[in-house]
Length: 251
Ligand code: 6PG
Image (cartoon, rainbow, N blue to C red):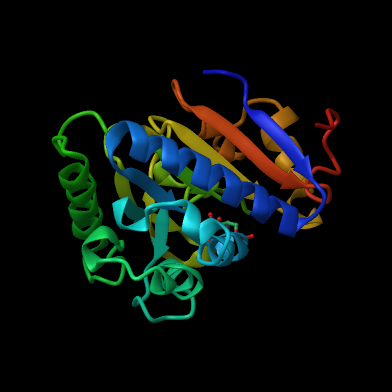
């Protein structure tokens, strides 16, 4: 894996704008080469502004949205109209404004009673859309967007949880003790196959975690974002000055 690129930007707005530029650049290249753009969206609150920017000029007019396949990196075990739903956030901020066919939007059905079955079905959906076997190696997503929590979790790969050890499945139900519940999450098995991974990190509450991930000793069980090391893809960290304030190496 190449060394990650780290770009320190002035504030969350510049992080979002830069992410929108990268999203469109990667998307246009994927569509030009492969005829479509397969992306896994991040949840949480940071990417909301990115999604809003993508849904409006100038970015809206720069990508052939009907050729984009939207997946998610993780989902909470709530219905799609719940305030905590990552699907709802992306739909409100972007998807509903892009006049997309429902067939291009692949929601994680984390609200189903059997989370393990829902995870297995999501893996099958990824395989179906990407034209690979659900039993084999994961496909190479064109872009994965990720956030990071103050505990250095990403997607729903939380410290000391079972999903961190997953070596086969691309999607799992992951019990998170601190949340006293399950989350559905993509695992490093598929995340590290991606052609491009972009982290969006902003705020001084992330500074200690970011320093631990990028400059601390290897300790992925305690610092799960360290697990994200694309085998042959590009890893880009878009961080604001607050989040980067504890880094020795300023970029
Ligand atoms: C989720 C996300 C999670 C998120 C981080 C950062 O479902 O919450 O996938 O990994 O990216 O917790 O969240 P914020 O952007 O809200 O700080």
